Amino acid sequence: MASLVKTTAIAAAMRRCPFLSKETLSFALNSRSMSSLAKKCPVMSKLMAKGVVTLPTANEVNEESSHEKATVLTKLEAPTQLEEAKPLPPNYDALLKEKIDTKKQDSTYRTFRVLSRTAEKKPYAMARTTPLDDEDVSVWCSNDYLGMSSHPAVTEAVIGTINRHGVGAGGTRSIAGTSHYHVELEDTLAKLHGKESALAFTSCYVANDTTLQTLGKVLNAEIYSDQGNHASMITGINNSRMPKFVFRHNDLDHLRELLKKGDPTRMKIVAFESVYSMTGTMSPIEEMCDLAHEYGAITFVDEVHAVGLYGYHGAGLAEEEGVAHKIDIISGTLGKAYGLVGGYIASTGTLVDVIRSYGSGLIFTTSIPPSTAAGAVASINVLAQEEGRQLRLTHRAAYNLLREKLLEAGLPVMECPSHIVPVHIGDALKAKLCMEMLLNEHKIYVQAINYPTVPRGSELLRFVATPFHTPAMMDYLVTALDVVWNALNLPRSTQY
Ligand SMILES: Cc1ncc(COP(=O)(O)O)c(C=O)c1O
Image 1 (cartoon, rainbow, N blue to C red):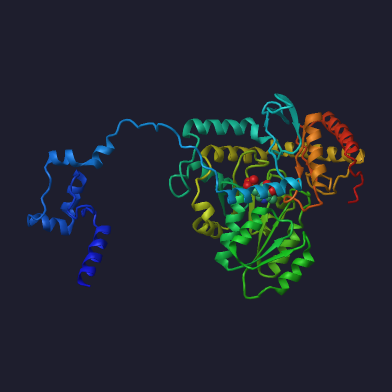
Image 2 (cartoon, helix red, strand yellow):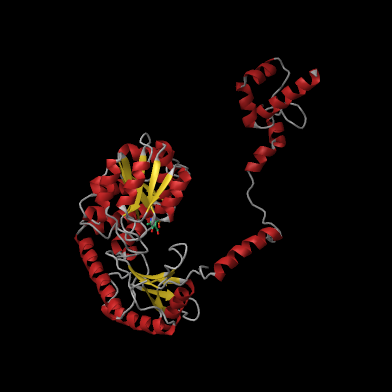
């Protein structure tokens, strides 16, 4: 028993003591840094004073210190040959293949179209794959709604910042990843939305997930969510593990019914979007906020498909309707109308500080590059001023004209008040075939929208007209659609 105690004590000491060598159970002082450390150690210094342990000579240190030798390596040896990657165990591989087959069978398997959008010839893109090698394709589904990804003020800000600061942020926000561009971006966003504070994330998916997840937990809140909410909000709400109540899309009565049934002692968050990206519907922002506040809830509004596009300064639909002050937390993206990448929230100083301090999606990831932040500030500033207002007007005229032309041709355009022009198909395979025929036979690219982005049976083509889509391009599109619609025997009626 006694020897067991002794052995355990020595083992514990060996785990902690940097001087005790496991192999020889002798004191290891074979480097200069270890020797100088030993002089400061209360145990080692006493042992040295009694002569039990002696310091090695300079020569001994040089000879014995493998640690120090390692640090003077001047060349790395290349491996003789790379190990071949091993396949997954057969049962893992079979299950994964089965998952892919399911997608292929119901026509929801996604193939990424390889098209490089051309900065100097908007809205065209270069196809680099057969059968369209190196041909121009017109793009009708990009969320670079106003062409800001190649606006000279934005590209110059990005390139100038890269030249001065390099391409990467170099760290997380709290460890070397906050530059003055990040600070300026957040100040600009807070001012744009009339809020005390803003916080930038690597994307709005991350902003929505992190904010709803963190806030739900911190407030121990019930969360009320519109049925049509984006996957990023649903994920954030689910990740919070708080009670969730889903109300029918834009249905104020249903929301009221659910709020009434809620726990009156608990805090509440009502989460919805201002413009729904696939169906193009808009929410009654003011009524939603008033109702939420009536029941003591706070509101989280995703303006991803509205920032840059609506409002005098491009701050979104809430600005356009004069109700931005009613929103407690607004989220937006830098990746669509602003033409870059990244996302953000804007709210009170304290709320933003809580997400900054507790949100793992903010704390544990490399921040957006300084160049992206600088480009975003340039883009926000352009769209907040007269040039932005003109672009918004041209954009409006373009999507209204497109909608008119499609309707005139008897195509089933779904009714909605926003800039999105959805055309109903209602069949995953036909939607996919339609997209392929438009691309391969007419050099027109519009992505078919299938499950899970929309419910099964609601498959559609989602058209986006930018200020750069001309009336002649629209006529060409409508003629091509007419041909494809006849070939696939697709429904003409807007009744679906
Ligand atoms: C409504 C909505 N919210 C959030 C996001 C995520 O934005 P981001 O692309 O910046 O991650 C999207 C993206 O498609 C969206 O449509």
